[in-house]
Structures are given as C-alpha cells and as structure tokens.
Amino acid sequence: MSVRYGPSSLCWLLYCGVLLAPAAGYVIVSSVSWAVTNEVDEDLDGASTEEALPALLEDSGSLWQQRFPASAHKESAHLPPPAGAARARPPPAPPGMFSYPRESGPRLRPGTARFLAHASAWGCLATASSHLKISGLPFGSCLPISDGPLNNSTGIPFFYMTPKDPVVADLMKNPMASLLLPESEGEFCRKSIVDPEDPRCARLTLTGKMMAVPPEELEFAKQAMFSRHPVMRKWPRQYEWFFMKMRIEHIWLQKWYGGVSDISAEEYFKAAPRKA
Image (cartoon, rainbow, N blue to C red; front, side, top):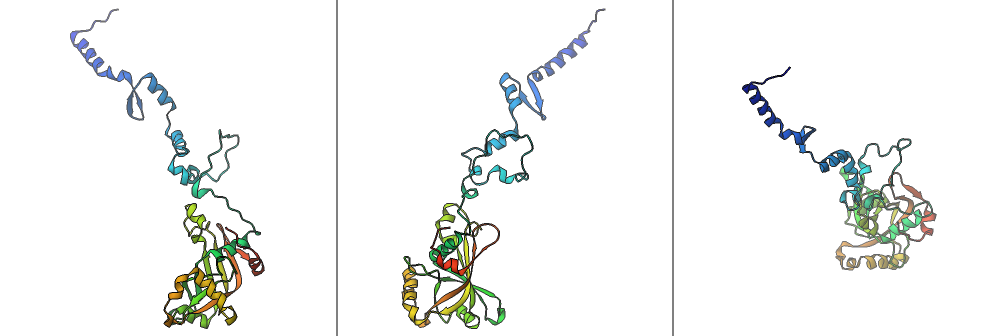
C-alpha cells in the first residue's frame, strides 16, 4: 500500500528537517552541547575533573604542592589505603614547611638547650608580680641576656638590671622566675619558612632563683653582657645599673609538637652547645 502525502504534509516534514539538521553534529553532556568530531570523542572519553585535579596538585612546579600537598586536605589522608590498592608511584616528598627532618633524642637535647642559651641575645622573664592590682600573678618582660662571650658559653643567663624596673621589685619579693628562650633568632626557622611561634621552632625554659652577681664574678658579667650588647655601656648611669644572674634549677625544652623534655642540670651543664 502506498502512502501519499499532500502538499501540506510535505511542507511540515521539510520544516522539521530544517530544525533537526544542526543537532546531528552535537551530543548532550550535562545539559551543555559541544560539536562532535573524532578528536572530541577521545577527549570526552578521557576527560575527568576528579582525575585532572590531583595531577595538577602533583605538578612539581605548582606553588600549592610545595607548601600544602593535596593529601593534607583530604579527610581520609590518615587512613590506610584499601586492600589490594596499588599506587603507580610514591607521592613526591613535599618540600618546604612540611619536610625538614631534624635530629632528636635524649642524647641531643642537653646540647640543644645549651645552644639556645648561648645563641639567644634576649629572653622573656616571667616573675610573680608585686604590683597591688595583680599581686602574685605572672608578669612577663623581655630582657637582653648573655650566658657569656661568644667564645665562652656558661649556660647561665646574665642580666643588666635597674632598680627602677618593676621586674626588680618583683624579684625582691619573690626571687623565683622563669626565662623563655625561643629559637626565633636562629637560622632554622627562617630558612624553613616556619613561623617563630610554630612548635617546630625549639624553645627553652629555664626556671630558677634570680640573684645579684657576687663581686668575684662582676668582671665576667661585664664581658658577657657588654660583648653581646655594646650599647649597654652608654646607658644612663643615673639608673643605677647592676648585674644579675639566674641560678638554674629546672630546664625544659620543647622541640616539636606535644610535650616538653625535662633536662637535668647535670646534663645541661655538661653538654656542649649544639644546634637544634
């Protein structure tokens, strides 16, 4: 049986053909159209945002990878890989602030403590305040210190003080104090682009009794302080400067995240200064 189309039917078919003809070369992907060619077919088969992103983060020239590797931002980064999963190659070792192995261990800690004591030109001294409004509360002051001339480390911090400093009034009432010596002055934190407040920058806390330097040690105290801080020689005499030192009783060292190491005074004074 033959089917005949009238003039109106033929016009309708021709009109539909004109509308559908351009769509023959397109494919719908996520409600967005691209022209289909042989080259694009291959791209559509292999393209994936999820696969391209890790490859971008692993690029050796990527600034992101150098400081914050992709694994640091994955919630499951701490979990072991699933059974049977094999990696084609190990991830690149991230440079910068995420990788700088440091020597550690009980044997090295006294030397590190002595190094911080000798390398530090200043420290933060905490005393029990004698001020009426904060009586008995901790009071901190940053002071220049020295444990001896550059070629003679004693491990004992010396101070150049004035009776007009409120810290001296505190010490007259309670001579016990704590001295914090951070590693911020050293080269490690700066070269590793680590904030001085980062726990990976070592810090030493010395606790003990503050006392005036006896007459037989005055000459050494002058050499210790004035060789490291020459400007002190020109400080106004009317402030009645005098020398003090700390008789160390406890040594605490923090070199990494977590707790601190308790170092005995015997180990501390026996050790030679050693970089952290």
